[in-house]
Length: 311
Image (cartoon, rainbow, N blue to C red; front, side, top):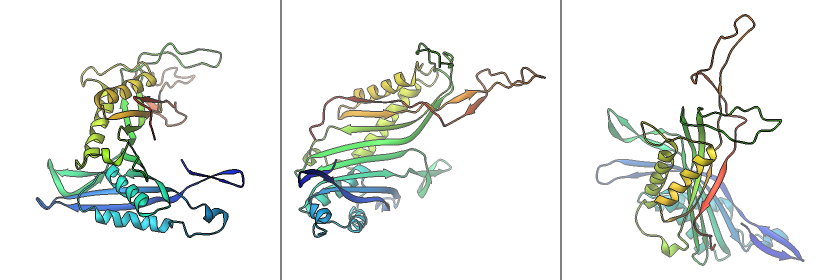
């Protein structure tokens, strides 16, 4: 997405912004004194009427990227109550489109670092946190007319099951050496993004932290569908099929999500068999000893959509 113009018969597209603005925010609960902490990595991109900066060296319509950076800290300070990463992105996008006449669209991307509250002897600590793994992400697009697109996501969600996975019936040709199997390790690192049905700023409810709660619920559905019931699990005939089941489960559970995209690399754990001329069986693989690898890996991606965007 970029601002489009025509200059001397040539199509010209441009956008500018500030990336990797890091901000930490602490909120203090007035009731019990508990502290809440987030760390965000913010990227801002503005579509604006500033063609003169490119073609006439006139910077009078440019919003300085340093100003964008400072705005992140100003708005973080103004959020006196705890907000989700999506809510903060909306605050920023609304500011840039409302405050600057020449800005037509603001695109805000934020990744939240996974700080998690620690527990001591089973009791949640009031102000102690440890770093987790997967990251909560968002992309918010706001136009000057109030049109809105909110996408949430999770990155780095590492999942593995040691059985209940196979891969059979695939194309075999002169370059195929992979054996068919109904018993293998299945490991992946899920990147998922889902778009909400909201189309305008006025359609967003004022319920606090609604996106944070929905993020946790969507993540749970993805994980539960991948693994299946605790005792018997669920069989995976391929990463493709499991990906589809996961995406389908999210759309089935959450009517306010209009589409979902999943990327699930097939991270391989290779069976270990060791032999020599002297000893033909040093280690015989019996679904027990593996060589973990992370490259090369299979790449599987798909999207399911309920509706098409009007934005």
